[in-house]
Amino acid sequence: MSPRFRPEPKPATPAASNVRTIVELERRAALERSRADTIGETVARWAGTLGFVLVQVALFLVWSAWNTWAPVRWRFDPYPYGLLTFLVSLEGVLIATFVLIAQNRLSRRTERRDQLHLQIALLAEQELTVALRLLRDTSARLGATPAAETLEVIDRLTEDTDVHELAQTLEKEAEQDGS
Image 1 (cartoon, rainbow, N blue to C red):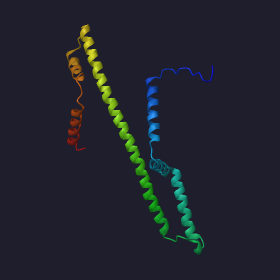
Image 2 (cartoon, one colour):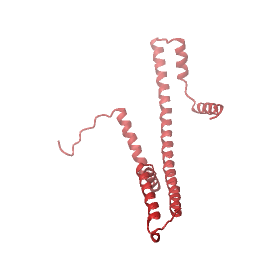
Image 3 (cartoon, rainbow, N blue to C red):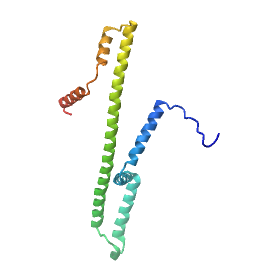
Image 4 (cartoon, rainbow, N blue to C red):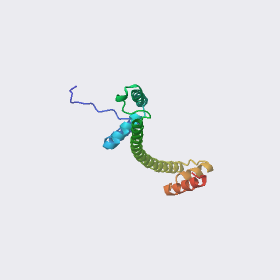
């Protein structure tokens, strides 16, 4: 077999195809990240680790020990450590900002996924409605008559779903629950 010849890949299962699609979407999303998003996520990810906590504790201990026990002329931030307090406050503000940047990006990604999920769900609902209509019509042609209760359910399920009406009903229910 020559190196240039590649056998045709086996047809992918739907699950494998879906996994590849999701991986591709995630790869594209990663490529679309701005420099600020990348920095924000990196800092937020590091700040949320035990390693970060341990480094912070070590630095605070060294700072405090130095400014307590070093010769007086070498102490640069005597107790109550005003400079340390300022730097820790600044660090807190910056880390909070980086976490918000990361959360905003995650929210945008989640919103895109939710929109995609909604579109797929609506398409699946439409496809299922058509499939139910075909089954109902096929059953009728074959003379198979389901029970009256089943016919009622089938008739309701084969109606087109009004998404706007569903959204309004959901909003009304949420308002009544106080949500």
